[in-house]
Length: 172
Ligand SMILES: COc1nc(N)nc2c1ncn2[C@H]1C[C@H](O)[C@@H](COP(=O)(O)OP(=O)(O)OP(=O)(O)O)O1
Image (cartoon, rainbow, N blue to C red; front, side, top):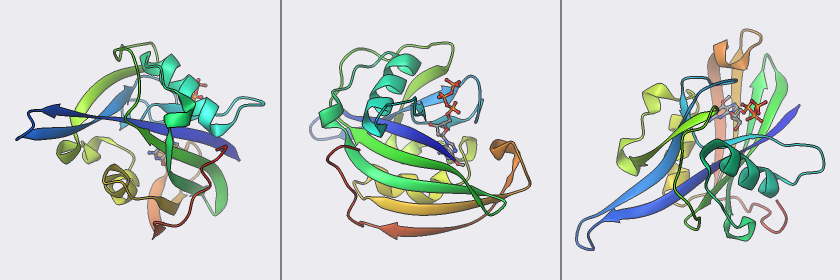
């Protein structure tokens, strides 16, 4: 089973009387989910904690620097393919980062209003869990796909979610 991360940097723009909440998404430019919007993230490397992975992937994909301690654990998602655990994904959010997002070979970053997230250009599961995560909730979810590899060509067939369960936040 693959262990992976997703990271959702957040910021507030606009004026005090008319603020706009934004999230940094990437348009993925290669690999799994190529051409779809997602958060920065990727697979854990040997010896790496999920938190370290989220920081490294965000740096590699869009050039933002994040202090691992500022990452807030927001979700744990299990993606099943044909009844088998395919990927376990740790989801983080943060409002603390430095640098300007930059396009790389892997990703094109884009600040998007939280009310205007392009769910029709994302993994089909995202519409079920990402809105809650962007509202500050925590989620534990299981998402079922069928149809064989690769995962991004399989059919999304069902899901179960639990909201605001306690998530371990000390070292993951
Ligand atoms: C199945 O549903 C999924 N939904 C969402 N939102 N994200 C998913 C889903 N399945 C996988 N992901 C995420 C997990 C990772 O963040 C990426 C896939 O990362 P990738 O395979 O490209 O990993 P990298 O380590 O960046 O790969 P390379 O450096 O080897 O290109 O998608």
